[in-house]
Image 1: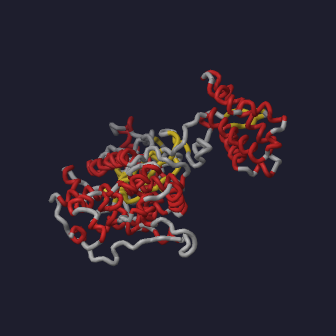
Image 2 (image 1 turned 90 degrees about the vertical axis):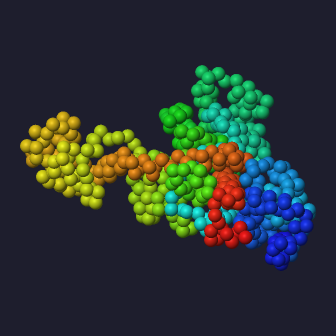
Image 3 (image 1 turned 90 degrees about the horizontal axis):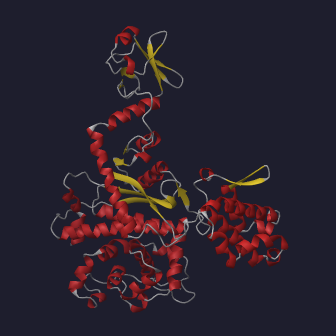
Length: 543
């Protein structure tokens, strides 16, 4: 049976019963801390009605007060606490009681099972994303956060899984399959055909067989394990009850990712042949691999910023993380633009311009940003092309060459099927002092240069990157690195306590919300110290 308590709806502000519990000085301190921000702006955005649908209104024992328990789940991610620490903080921490507006001692004491059940409901309902968006939108509107300038970057995080090499990975997958086979099909597990394979994966011999491998012998041991896996797959592929087991299908996938069969010989693929979205650990099937940062997940963070020469002015302005997207590590940053812009458009928070590093700066993303009515400030990826067209003057509307590096105009611009050609006078080119360094080539009708539109666009962008305007805009991008650092260290996001994309997304999103709450609390503290004048809606909140 569900229990949800109303908060302050029936009391005149200043006469609430809980004010008898706390002194006025303590209430003032709590109001000026993160607890005050949480109570004012987060508590009301908890999707309690959506979660309540999982409970009966009249059948069963009364649940713990739902808003309190959901709020405790959010605070657990804010402060990176274990389940036991969360229960302890909820029971004894007055900041938590004030933040959750939970002053009934019975509501403050919950069991581990209650915490687990509530968190599971939040994960399955993707409630973290709803809470983040609703709270962030509320803070943005209330404190008139300027969203015209934003910046985007990704940060690498890890789930609660061990980092396995290929030998341990393949051995672990086989071991899990054999355990499940023993549990559900003991007769087949005891078959004599498995005797030679099983002895290497028995618990008492496992450490000796896989742990005491010299580096020089690791390739041989990996080949032996691959052969064992191949034999197990072939032995049970026609047994429907076993072939449909999750552990068998995982084993089949890992073999396909790491091994191949050529002329009836099992071979282990080279490291470069293993796909980046391959299984890294059977305990976290969603974790993938990034060649630069390793195993795990990555989080795309978009935040607002302001262009100020005086860094001291930043404390008087509130900047928030506007969008957070958790994804597997193998996803390239260039593919993150669309979902982030789509999210911001739905919430009417699209920037006029946003900056990102080179990984995001492909031409497709430049054009995509224009479709959303925003401008991407990012260096062009890739090496400088062999055909140097940087000295040419180009019409940015028609993408035709107007003048060569020496200042000569082409006698003709020709449109081909997939390219353009600019033709210059032979007489001018033969007498030109820059002829040896110019990329034009001699032809029947004169000297010509053939180019594609994308080459011209790249040239225009490279020229713009050398301008003071671009450098002044792009220099603010680096500020998001500090946000990334706070995100992984202040909230403990670097290594989460969960596995699987759904749970990692839940924790990663709420930790981004924590950054916004801490920033708002600091901003209000600065406002209270007189460094900024309250205006508009901020004044109403202060009163």
